[in-house]
Length: 304
Image (cartoon, rainbow, N blue to C red; front, side, top):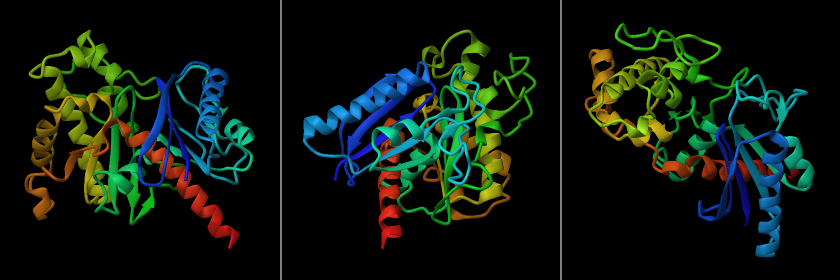
C-alpha cells in the first residue's frame, strides 16, 4: 500500500511516499516559501510518484507547523492559523491536497503530533501510551499521547509557549518570540541561541556556556510537563537536539529541579526516560505517513 506524508515545517516541507511498515521509498525536501508554490511542489511530487510507481496513493497524511485548526466541524479546518511565519497565516493546507486527490483519505495534525505518532508506531515510544515529544529547532513545539490517544483538546498543545522565568545571566533582554517575551520557544529555539551568542548553535563548541543555559530552560519546561501529564517518557527531537551533550545536562537539571519529589525507578537516572528521537530526523515525515494510514483506517471503519 502506497502512502504519502507531508512534514510541513516553517523552513522546509519534507514529502515522502512509503508504506505501512514505516519504510520510505522516496522523499523530497521543498523550501517553505509562499503557500501556493510550496503546496504545488508537494502535490507535483506525489503525482509524479504515482506515475513512476504505476500505483495510486491510498492516503496522505499532513503534519504541519502551526498553530492549526484540527476541528473537522470548523470552517477553518485544515488551515494554519495565526502563525508568525510570514505569508502563511490562515493558509488552507488540507484543501489543495484534497482537491488534487479527491478520492484519498487525508490525515491532518500538527507536525509534532505527527512525529509523536511516528515514534509511537516505529520509534522510541513503542512501549509507551502516555508520552511527550518535544522538537527543538527553528521553533519549539510539543505533542504526544495521553492513554493511547493523540493530545488534542479545545485546540492542540502549544508547549513551546509555556512561560518561563529568564535566568539572571541570560544575555538576552527578552526572548525572540514575537508574541511572548519569555516563553520556552523564544528563549530556547535555534534563533534564540543565535541571537544570544551571535552565532548558530551548530558552530558553538560542546563546552560553550550556551548549552548550560539551553539545558536550563528545557529542564524547567520538562519538569512542568512531567508533573502535569505524568508521561512514561519524554522524547526530544529537532535540530538543536543534535547537540548530544544536551541530554546529560538536561537530565541532571531535571533531577535537581524535581528534588526527589517524584519517586519511580525510571526517574532515578532518567537515562531511558528523557531520550532522543528513535527515528531521528525522519520522525516527522514517517509520522505523517502514519497519519495518512490512520485517516484511511478511520474512513474504512466508518464505511462498515
